[in-house]
Amino acid sequence: MALIEIKDLVFKYNDKYVYNGLDLNIESGSFTTIIGRNGTGKSTLTRLLVGLLPSRGSIVIDGLEMNSENLNTIRRKIGIVFENPDNQFISETVIGDLVFGMENLRYPRYLQEEKLQEIVSYFEIEDLLNKDPHHLSGGEKQLIALASVLITDPEILILDEAFTMIDGVMKKRLYSLLKKIHRQKKITIINVTHDIEDANYGDDIVLISDKRVLKHEKKEVILSDEKLLKKVGFEPSFMADLSIKLKYYNLVDRIIFDMNEMVKTLWK
Image (cartoon, rainbow, N blue to C red):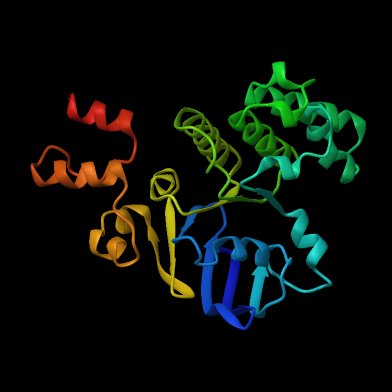
């Protein structure tokens, strides 16, 4: 079932088309990576999905047409984490940021305390609660930004180039948390990125090029299509490329995206 339905979307910026007739459906409960080169309008699409920019065409989210009447209801269904988490912090302490969204939505006190304990335990951030979020490391900032969004249980989580500025170790930790959350809570995740390696962590890929969706398929299909990726300026991800080479020598029988799984497969 499509949770997000976009039909014939048209958006212009300074009389230049960013999208001209874009169609896209995103299924409920999916983990979808939207990928394209810089300048293809990926972040613009994020803003269109929460009604921050005017457009022509149709955007329907959970059965609600994007319009002024439905806008607030739609926005309550969506949580967004941006590239620069500093822009999302509003409090002088981490705990203040965590409870802000719940206070804004008028959660009762007992529920705020319950959700706070749950998210703090889930993200293992007990030692950060009384710190100023602006003084944290880059990875810690994104961890708190993500926790602050997820604490109110959005139906849709959008990551807008959210992990661009963090190192590989923290990125892997955050993606592991996201996979766990996706599996347990069945939340719909949309990861908007220009980094082909990030596509390894989702299930589906939407490849955007030339003002439209070039292809929307399972990641195994797109990441193993070297010709398609090179057409839009990408090389296969490291793990996909390694799998393709090992498949050629009959050392693996499929595309493997997780390094630990690859090691286990090769050592059988």
